[in-house]
Length: 192
Length: 397
Image (cartoon, rainbow over all chains, first blue to last red):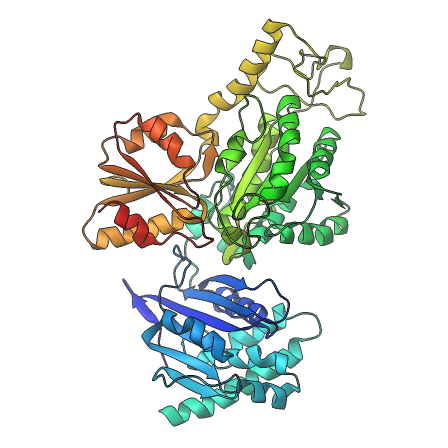
């Protein structure tokens, strides 16, 4: 459940990478995750994006640092959590994750090597089943976040989606995140 | 959970002394990019005109202004290029509006001649350069800090200039408010030197209510129009009339007399030069802003700015864990440098390191001010990746 790093005098810092292919909605989900922590949960957050100069295709990722104190160092040193929506995203980022970190891999996104840190879930299938749109896959992945860190709750995520999603898309994005959370609840119950 | 650091905001550089208690609940939390913070601050500073040509990584600034300014009855114009952009801002400022443009390296190069015009004619205008990597087109979405010397010396001829360098989203907000205040107070162009990381990074900031923030406006003439001298040497910063309101205000890029008409009189030229430098020299303690981190007992000192200053602070933390007494100075003002301060803070250090995302720019002035009494080393990077704190630490081992 809790992969958050305890730093110094009880300071909590959690580093999360959201990685996928351009067009999977990662920049919006990164913004929403950061906003959930910074505004809804009243913590601190820093988000840095990187993307290829293409609207579709190429690697795309969002690095998010969440802390209960103001963040001086904005970079990810070793991530606590990686969400990889495609096998290429896993391969590009697996070295940036802690040995005891958690990697959520989209099993609809190709094949990857055996890795004890990996938890697999068919995120694209969940997106299509819940909203009929594959593009909500990154919102589905946000539904897993509350099961991987105790810093961000599902309520915080849905309230940030309601605030930040493009006009008219809040409902569908919330449905996707909730479908993700429902799947995560069963998945993580099995793990325990 | 209680949001920390409100006292810092309360005592921040932009919040004025107010008699009432500063209430945490009055601040609006926002999770925004450095570029967005710049826009929010400019609107709070009562920006009246934005003229620009969008370019990565500054485009969000133009995009947001194009929506926000017309809503407030203010003017946004997308000009045909960056030469026209800065020219339009100078014109708007002469017309009495606070004006701003934003660009990146390629556009900043095109603006240089007219930045000199604003220096010469003493026109308040704020120019944001969100630095990207390389000369020419370079790499549009990769960060760098390679415009440090261009910001200082990009336009030709001797001139003072004010360059502010935010290192966070919060500082992007603060430095933008201050850029307008200094521009208005001193009748001068002010450059905000941001970079791709600061511009695009999202962080939490607490936006203060308007009434907490001190907003300055240029002095306007009160004398009869017949006795108004737009470049009077009786004061360091002569009042600036609004064109079309009855005052004669001749404006030229030529060296000029107190009335603004061209002159080749050596005394008049010297008086003008002395005055525009005096504006900066006399206000250096206000203009030069910096933060210190664990400097008091430091044997090693990192002097940095912008995004690299955060890498330097991390390097201090790492050094201290190993028992090495390191400290950092973050420069929020790059030009003018308070040379007295720099000389005193480097004095007695075993080594001074200047981390900056370039091949060596600020470091040369730190070396010059250190006069060879303290060794000064550069740690740089020019591949679009932020400097690794360990590389800074390695430099002192």
